[in-house]
Amino acid sequence: MPRFPKRQAKIIALANLMADGLLRNNPIYPQPPFRHMLLRVKTRHYLIYRDDLIAKQAAAKQATATKDEVLEELTELMKTDIRYAENTVNFDDDKLKLIGWSGRKTATTLQSPGQTRLLEAAKQGAGWVFLDWKQPTDGGKVSAYKVQRRIGDRWQDVATAILSEITLVAQPEKTELEYRINAINKSGSGSPSNTIEVVL
Picture (cartoon, one colour):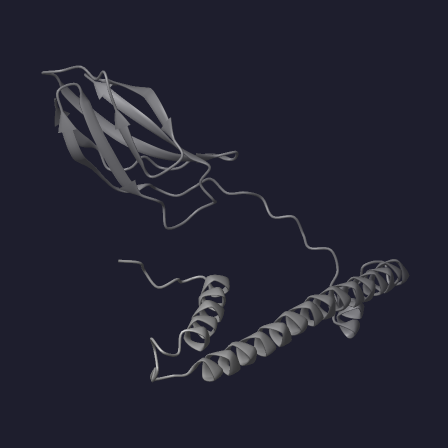
């Protein structure tokens, strides 16, 4: 059983074939619900609206390109005036605000991240553990997370994660392991997260 086409071009091609077929084979199809003339009229209507849409889309594309060009020209004019104003008033913030601009912003020092939160061992198996945690709610932006493990008294760095989750493999089995997470960035390390105990 053939399927009715979905593509517009194939629908129009089928409409033309049907209109021709109904006209030429009137003895076989003497009283179709919609005669060949109506199919031809609706096909013409479709083509008129299609061509109109294509023309409007082309005009819209050209209008968008023209708009973008004018905006770029305006931007360059504004930037030139801003540079003039900044040099004229020596970046005086109050005077630059008179034209809707402002002086140079004072550089802010990146802070170390805050404390990583809610560390848990969501899944685990023989020699592996899946850890996840929540990012700090305070401090500077986090660049990565340092994963630390303790066996006995000494903490060791065992991995670095970009996301707030990691699967650690080849972990010691049948040993009490402790894990914690530190958020880090260029300014330093945040406070360690809560510590969790795991036996794999």
